[in-house]
Length: 83
Image: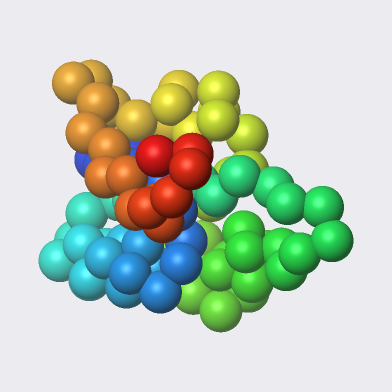
C-alpha cells in the first residue's frame, strides 16, 4: 500500500508530525538516514509506534517508491552545514 505523505527526519519534531498525520487517518512513510554508532531511529520508531499506518525505512529509494504520486514530503532536518 502506498503512503499519502512522507516525513524525512525522525527527531522530536519529525516523529511528532508523523504521528499527528497518522492519527488523522493518513498512511505515512518515514525515513531517517542511518548513522553508524548512533541509535537506530527506524527500529525505535517501529517498536514504539508499530507498523499499522507507517512505513519506516533507512533506504531513501524505498522511501520514495512507497509514496503515492504526486509525492508529498516533509523535510525535518537540523539546520547547519548540511543544510
